[in-house]
Length: 554
Image (cartoon, rainbow, N blue to C red):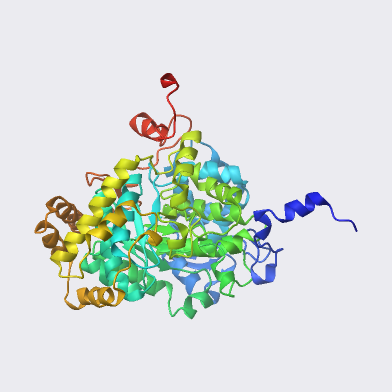
């Protein structure tokens, strides 16, 4: 047949480069409400759960057992499971029923029950509920700071700029594993230069992350993955109990941590048991709650291509974010790994969390150009800062970032590079040259940086570990080499580690090291005019984009 020119044009649009599949229930390629999902049920005898979502205790797998033992408020469970799910959904949606009343119900639900409730909601209703159910009143966002060369000067400068722009947490990882100590230090110190109170982590394998945290090189962790089927869990030589033990190890050393999960992980690993992605993710969230962990990085994260390929998949992603908040967990809601060729589609995917607000709208906004992002690329990157700030301004929404002036960025990047120069000198590490400082001050990415001697850097990075360098050594090095004010901010961070107040649900710091959490600043949304509003000084900052023209000057 003769081809339509309109269809020819449409076929070349970026959206048609994305991957889409029809549903395949048996393999778990279904986002929500699979016919194989269990029906809600619970039966309790002498304080012990003997039936959970259609399974008797004898049939429980490891996940069922862990959830039944630790993850459900048994006092109200039988009552709540009997309630009409649509009625509960409407209670969550009704603005003037306070969050505290809803949480009393939702913490008593089973995984199948909580999915049944959310399945009744359309995407706008899910977003409206998310606005109310977010744990902390204020919204925030998190960034990735990496580069292909693991250049410590660039990481420090990028981290300083990211902190200045508003990221409350920043995360790095490595291209070369042995560079990791440099990356962790660069991120932490650069962040404190940009804005005191920013929390940082270095994403590595779990034992090394814990080691770095105990040395004082990081302040939080989140790459502690949990899964919704037993086969996937045990393939990784883990159980819910081993993850709970690891969580306690972090917390006992004053490190904030959250688990990571996301719709589609089990399908990606070929062990979905024919269940919907949302139901399996709900099990992950119950594991998180049962382990006593304060929060979760979820929203499909690294497996976003899986739910994005099936009908209602993006709805499932925001639904899992909502379930996290219904279980009273901090929600770092992803908007992380890139998943589409379409700018329109990636913007709409983010809007689900951006408009209602989550504890961390992005758990991986790349503060570098995407070619430098070692987390497989991000949905948002350094070339999108202006777009993101305009979206906040357009909608009067607090997405966690603020406009900045070029001269401010240059100043803070230069200082971060000089601080790293002083630190390396104080610790006897390979010198950072004035040329590197200058380049990092003005660089967009690693293509603008001079090469370092990677062999010597790697030897020195490993030497830090072998010498037993710890946080106090960093403080001394900075104090003795011209930057006592940054040394003091590191000391403030370590004091907070000892106090442990920021281990509470959804904790962040302001620039004066005051903890802001779900405990002392709970989400109090009960309708129009309540909850977090972008007002006063912060709204003035969001409005003040550099490219806006004052018409009175024309």
